[in-house]
Image (tube, rainbow, N blue to C red; front, top):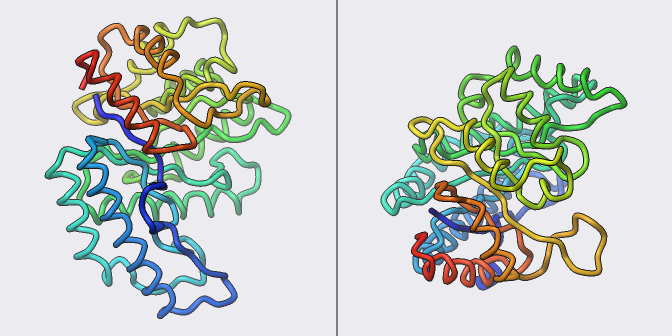
Length: 297
């Protein structure tokens, strides 16, 4: 079992998602920003290795405006060696990597322009993993999208886009996550049945939106959509409710008692856990200590 956190390390004095305004775009500024972002990513990975965090969600913003028409620079060639070295580090130390495009990536939008831009963004993020030489166990994580007043029609659009418009190299990495308002685990299972797309399970979202499936059963259902030899073991996001806040708001810090209770539902299932908790690596350290006590890492 691997454990990790997404995108930002609160202990380091750098960001791997530095950017600039579109109006001030230039190739020089792009190169300078990507250099800084990739240097910070290397520092984050080294920190994670030192602390035993072997699962990490890379920022979508490594290359600013990568899928925007303004960016015609061949950044892939310019940074080919840097990406390869990052990938070599990841592979050498048995790390697992994911990326999670922003909310504007919607494959079931009725607006063809949004679908085209969503595919372009997925191609960019997949190409980052390709440049690193990572296999298909490194995943691109998306939500099913909107409902637009007709969920069956929205599901059909997702299936059509997946089957007919996505490049094979994107399909190989794509996973769909159950969300807390629109698309439950059962909805995602319907998508899996039509496309074969694995389901990235979110325990907190399942608590917010479900059809009565107990947590242990839900985990097994999601895990059954993964092919370990190709996809790796089940990836999942873990969080819990922030007390006194609106339903669905993630907690600021790990509640170790709740985390221990959640682990009882795994029942021997091997998973890689991404902590979606606001204090990032601080909670990750506490979670790893729990896993070590239970001999799960």
